[in-house]
Length: 180
Image (cartoon, rainbow, N blue to C red; front, top):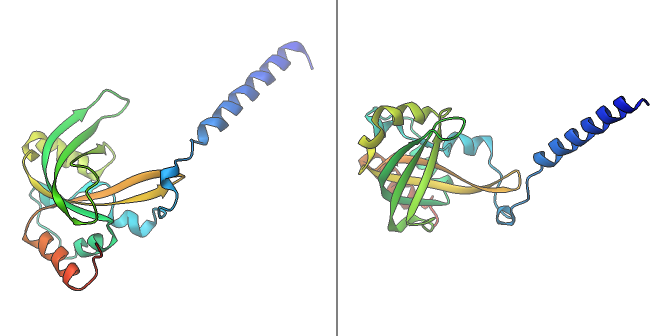
């Protein structure tokens, strides 16, 4: 093989091996024993904010009780900050929640939780329309940890803290569908 082709072939092989290394992230030991994130789970805990937080009328088929049953934890709290971060390639919001102890179900993930909402999320446009107007709003965080490709990942849904949501969670508890 001529020398210029050997150099090109070696360069391609090095480039391909670098791509292979990047496709295999380091395994997260914290993910061991966590359930897989299924299509059903993604329909309930999909890293979004309820449109009800932004003034939309709740759909009567809203699966709050189903989310509560699926969730590993449920916590009440308030929105502390809403920040638009545009330092990377794409914009995203970081929404900080201050959670109140004790948790409604499970244990608090922390007293303060930061949730990231990317531009591809249906919640992004809602957040952009209100931004800091959401600060101080009482919320209910429903969450569960999953094993996604060997990485421990927290998946969540944020509901408005109102009579409909609290009632659905309480009914699920009374029916024995929530285990602490």
